[in-house]
Image (cartoon, rainbow, N blue to C red; front, top):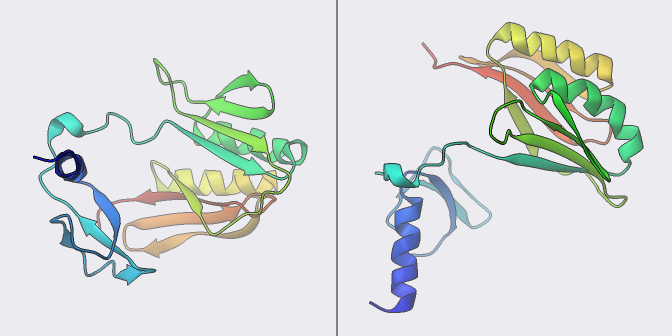
Length: 181
């Protein structure tokens, strides 16, 4: 087997069981998901039979967020991050950083300054364990100075959420999702 074919086979194996975006071209044997549609020359596909050995024990490690002014962002994130479960403040020069208390190395959320940063349409969503948890976080973000707050509200069956922006337009959501009945 050629080096390139071996790389492709390894990548196919690594992608099995995940949802992936791929350029519209022949290649992997994923099953297209017609409910997701196609946008910008990309298709959403779900591969099947993901081997247990390739599953990640955590879904993410950290978030690095940019804001145009760290000094102006600090009061907002000092209120938001502990309410989301990032309760341990860590001193890192040039960053406002909070970590979760999970061991050995918890997830963390860091905010740093990038004077030219412009918010885009990306949104970071956090999970709450109940609708009441969403309501509590909605109160916290309102007091902290969030902009463009929508909700909290039932978004669809089994999906209760509040949507908001930080003072610079970075988008967030806190949701409680359950399986629809």
